[in-house]
Image (cartoon, rainbow, N blue to C red):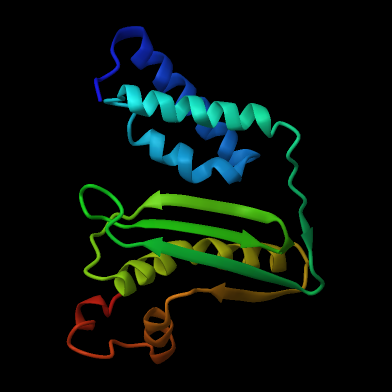
Length: 181
């Protein structure tokens, strides 16, 4: 697809950054799509502009969409983490995560992984390692201000990653290099 130039390129960059501000605060349902467009701000194409227009139409069409937040008692911080292996052109994975206290998310993350994983298991382990510190800090903050916070429940869907985390050490020569994580 042809590259955008001049004013169109500047406008693309400006609108994507404004959307990023919006999705980080009140519209996490669009986080993955907008985060993807942030990777295109230096060399946006006409196809990227079409994707941006589609996001803007979705935003206008779902203007009344609201998010409800409530906490359970005692508070259990739930962390839902997932990853995609080799999702980017440079073969790096992508991490996604949501933290809840009951109903509705209180923290969201969608980011390209900084490391290149050799397998989906390793990509999932990188995702957990990168994400879980935020929910753990949230538990400490809640305790500090007087709430009965019972810790973090981690929700992970990769069986191999769960086995590695439960075992606490690499299971074979294939996973020996990820001991630090």
